[in-house]
Image 1 (cartoon, helix red, strand yellow):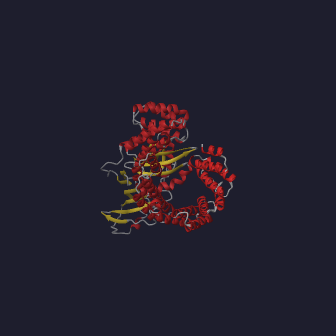
Image 2: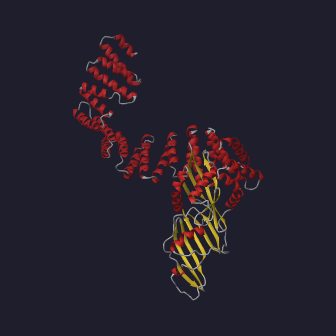
Length: 635
């Protein structure tokens, strides 16, 4: 926990003496993730009154620890988790986060074992063992299925984050007491890393007691004072104390599991369960966790979980085990039902991490099987984890599928405010699209686009969406927007996007005028040729030039351009349309056999294009006095 850290090279103690006793006081010092708010040492046997002597005078004196107040903030915990992430990644565990709650620390992670992967969550409770602290993991859940038992994963995470050692007597590091059980000598470790590196002798700590342990959403606060000075509640709730007693009872079986002797551990847990006692819920959690990880124990796990629910209908570990086993057996719907119940129970208990992860796991399973049920679970997941990008994106897709446009607008606007610039721009563009195409509100669409332009003035997608929206209401502004899209694409070296935008510019220019105005075609053709300079395979530009050539009567050039469109991977209906237009130019060139071949290809697409192709074939047949074939084409 404090390995590799040390306090400042000089400790700014202040010294005061009264009635022959000196006080050395140190305040607001950082040692690794821990803030020492106050450290007070007592100096006895002063002899003559030293007055306001320099504190360094007592560096070599044997002092006594009188008081110690420490604080660990959420930011410090984040740094500690980050430091442990590389080691955990080697164990197949990633995405670890630890969040402070009232009375416990909530931990979540993503674990992988072979081809299986699932989210893991648990709580860390702090209890006392004399002047030392015990960090205990409880409420351990795998939201899915993994072949590694959940307590083993929690133990790995707990030990790595705390920097715990299996060796006893190493004062500067926490000590692994058992499975999911780490003992922390906070006083010894803190003084060891703080005082000797600065040249101070370690004080005596025999007359000190733990007087307060507080875990809140802001920080972990631990205070020590003189023996017998505690007057109020220590701050440890009854639940964690019962958990500590259960860990002591299960210690032997836990050690077997931690050592990899799973069968021996299972026998030990079952023997303790038969003996009865108040620790039965904790024992059942261990047994169900092991049964969920091994296919040979699935049947026993299912039976035991159902019996547990018969006795305790709200027993979360049973739902977690049933979800894991049924998922491994391929029953996704049943697994999702238990995950949903687990999420609702965690939500009622105020456990945001477990509620969010269970809801998200259930929603993934139901997204295809039962989409509306998945929507409700995504909403629950986002309620408990507003920062979940997966839940937000999936919920947005589900709201769009269900055409719940007002709710989608509220969701996207809320997400856009809290997201980074790139994501915010994407959401503003999606909002603009919803307002235009679903809600018929172009004014609101323009408002969203203006925000997107302020966030990313050089983002081509913003100008592209602006041009698309303006195409019907303000063609001139749309034309300028497409030109800006092309310019930005050229600047960043994206020639294909620039050519596509220029092809659209040419199309808009051509629409301004009738085909009789040659100058208009000249302007459009110049833009299309520029597009082909950037991308010789730009199909819209080739088609535009072909259309312009045909409109002028240059059917030879038009036919050549239409033939270039073959083999470019166009959709069938688009390719058929171009074959029809090619055939019309070939007819003008009196190349009837080639025209018939193109028309036959055009008929393959079906629909209106095929009908037009048959009509042209009938005209060709009638022109050659082949009335029988003409009638056949029109049938």
